[in-house]
Length: 64
Image 1 (cartoon, rainbow, N blue to C red):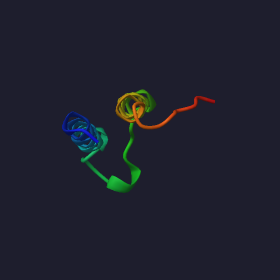
Image 2 (cartoon, rainbow, N blue to C red):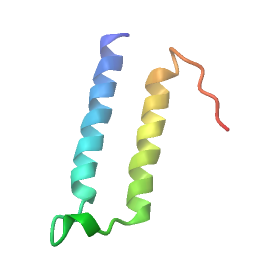
Image 3 (spheres, rainbow, N blue to C red):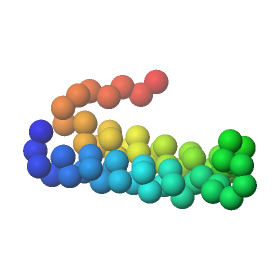
Image 4 (cartoon, rainbow, N blue to C red):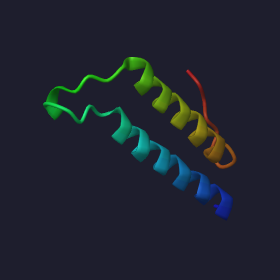
């Protein structure tokens, strides 16, 4: 794996951590936080696309 690919993976990790923290409702009861479905979908979709881009050079990714 090349250094730029490792950096992309680090960036994806950072993106996930930041957005995870931003999506959580930190007021009130943390067990019943309300998160918008579209916000969660954006984070997951972007992460999958970014991972596909990095991993695409090393593995064949099939879409169902």
